[in-house]
Amino acid sequence: MRTSKRTQILEAAARVVEREGVKGVTFDSVAAEAGLTKGGLLYHFASRDDLVQAIHQHLADRWEAGIAAAAGKPAAEATADQRLTAYTRVATQSATRAELLFMLEAATSADHAAPWNAVIERWAPPPPPATGDTATLDRFITRLAADGLWLYESLTAERLDPDLRQAIAERIADTLSRDGG
Image 1 (tube, rainbow, N blue to C red):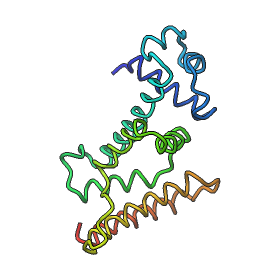
Image 2: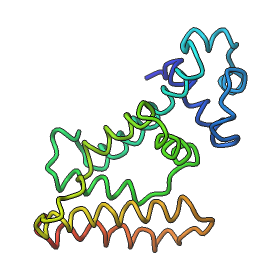
Image 3: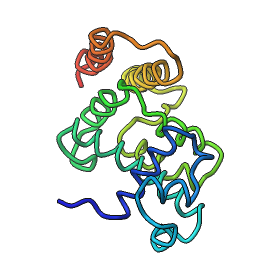
Image 4: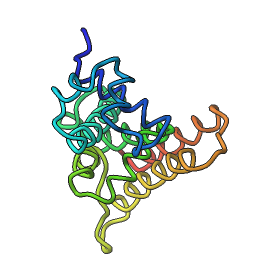
């Protein structure tokens, strides 16, 4: 299937962010990266804000597609443990610079956070009540462990040996099966 022009633009914008950060996203930089004119870009996005919001949605959609692939099905068809296992398997992989920067930026804007939060709400368990049962608490700890590995590799210059990362990811995912999930 041929990639849409809009998707090509959003992938080009992600490459700009990889090199130059979010502030580097301008109509000129994205148009040049996508091989379009500025007018061609304006046809798809009326403003820089529209473009930035679309990048948030595109990256969140790409992240969710990876989680759904790990689950082998969409969130609506997966059990809670299948959703968490898939989330864990994807979260234990390093983020791209663009994903990390956009997730961090999302913390400053409800509109920017919405696509990311929607993915998390579909796939990851919410924080349990303080008086919750231990199984619910353990499921949330599993999520935190996966998020912690993701942050560790995303925020430090140190890269884990791929075999060690895989062993950690499997150990985190195995906590679900040990708890009867």
